[in-house]
Amino acid sequence: MDAIARTNSVRTPMTESRTPTPSRKTALAPDVCQLDERAARAWTERMAVRPLGDGRYAVDSQSGATYVVDVPDHSCTCPDNQIRGERCKHLRRVGIEITTRRVPAPGKRAATCAACGVDAFVPEDDEPPLCDACRLEPGDVVRDREAGDRLVVASVTPDRADEVVVEAVGEMVADYATNDGYPRDDLVVEAVYLGDLARSESPRRYSFPRSRLERVDDAEVVGRTLRERVPA
Ligand SMILES: [Zn+2]
Ligand SMILES: [Zn+2]
Image (tube, rainbow, N blue to C red; front, side, top):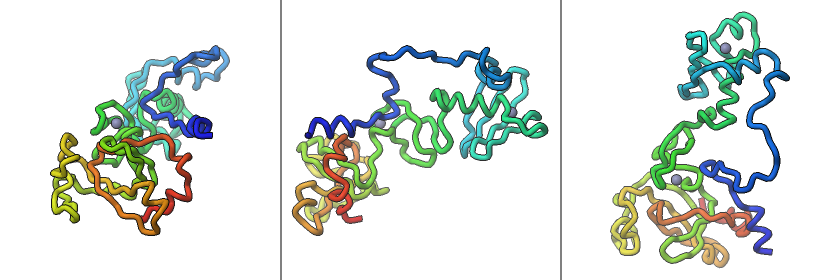
């Protein structure tokens, strides 16, 4: 039961893009002879695509001109799109580069994860930038790296561990003995113990430096109804 549920709940973080075992024969590019001219050029012409933010991308075309593609608006500044109203090769090229993960999708930007150091596409406005595996959100099930306990995230605060006092002990989160070794400027995450959540109507929240908590993949095992009982 447990093993099956775990298999179903395995997440594929965007940082793990490799397929472990190639099982099916597949082409990596389309047969351009079968495509219409604009689609074929989008694949084969030499272009450079640079994300500008807000879903806009600069495309340096093979001819030397630079156009701006706006993905949410489905528009491009080139004559083919502006005058003829065609879905031009620049728009198509940006779509290909997003799909093949050469550039971030609208709403994302390329950044180095502040927690684990991998290069990833992260939500455009997130500060500090965190990869999918490191980003925690309310309702996520996490493991305390020190004690091994399972908890559910109640909130990710904007406050740093060296700024927040744990009232019960009168110490900063960062100064708490078991938090030694975690960055002092980690954001503070409030979480409740799974056991408390099952037993109590108003489970107590505890404060942790963000990197002390590791997201685990058994959210479905824990169950939505239980996670929804985490006080907001
Ligand atoms: Zn265009
Ligand atoms: Zn990370």
